[in-house]
Length: 69
Image (cartoon, rainbow, N blue to C red; front, side, top):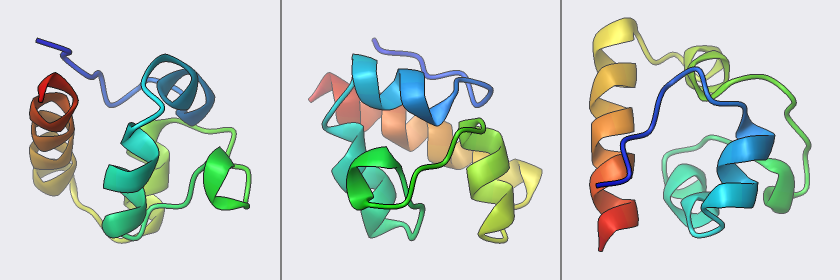
């Protein structure tokens, strides 16, 4: 299982898991490949979009599951 840590940088996430771009974009989280570079972490990007800590935990679990498909 590709367990994603919410403190992974967006840059590392996209480099290691390019298909994460689609998953994040569908949830309103911009990323490097979407045209607007974000150099923070997944947690920071999600928080910027209004995700609370519980939602961030759920997001990372769903992203990990998505990447395993």
